[in-house]
Length: 199
Ligand SMILES: N[C@@H](CCC(=O)N[C@@H](CS)C(=O)NCC(=O)O)C(=O)O
Image (cartoon, rainbow, N blue to C red):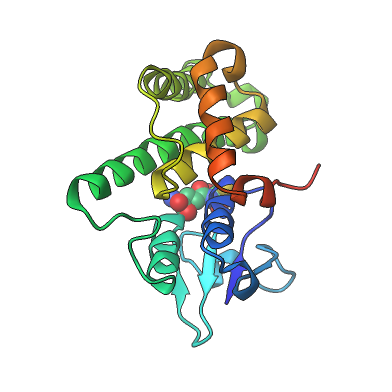
């Protein structure tokens, strides 16, 4: 299988982390998201990474569906619990982690793609508020760090991305999440195995 993603994409990291945790990393070869002569939109009309390209040519996106695919490939019930309450909790946590990431990515894109004269600070603040409200809610009630699920994978990717982009000093503001990440890294080597390369 090919995983079309940059190594710095936090959503791509979700997929890489899932593969690493499930022992599938050797079967999943990351390929550059933006190869010359072929755009991401050839594989995903939304033009977003990651895209998983199966051996039979099928394209699987987005990161949530890729994680579900990996879970099935690894026998099922591994990172996507089968028990209904645990499953909904994991999926809801994933939605929160992904939403924090969406807000963080949109803040970056505001600076990258919008001319300075057109930047709208209140809109950036609105995204930042989603990010900090999300982290604050998680710090008040941290999930079980030992349960490696689509939800905790997404949260770990969100914390790693905010570390990299320095969008908020979450280590100072939310010490419960520092402990949480230490617990998650003790539960799986997938976080350390998927660190993005230095820029
Ligand atoms: N919901 C998607 C989000 C993917 C996403 O936003 N990826 C970013 C890179 S981190 C991207 O490809 N952005 C390009 C764009 O939005 O045009 C997923 O979970 O895979």
